[in-house]
Amino acid sequence: MEALDGNAIAGDLQELFGHDMTAARGSCRNCGDSHMIAELRVYLRAPGAVVRCPSCGNVVMVLVTIRGETRIDMRGIGGMEPAH
Ligand SMILES: [Zn+2]
Image 1 (cartoon, rainbow, N blue to C red):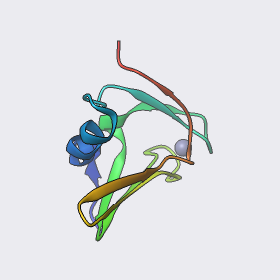
Image 2: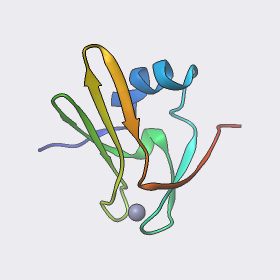
Image 3: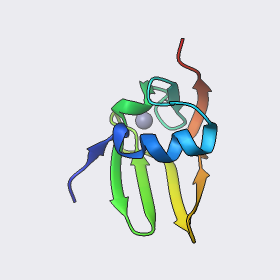
């Protein structure tokens, strides 16, 4: 499956967090590398998306949309830093 970048989930994240998250940074819980959301690798897979760390491939986020409502699992992220 071909990977998209984090811009593929920009709309979902904006809905969840209320603002544009693509320039926010998240650190990977597995390898510790910090990436902008826009740099993450996104695999769209119904009914949601799997988001992986571009450094190590660890799953950092899972988005699931059920009945028009998007839920996000961010267990793979060690920490989030808002865009400055
Ligand atoms: Zn990683």
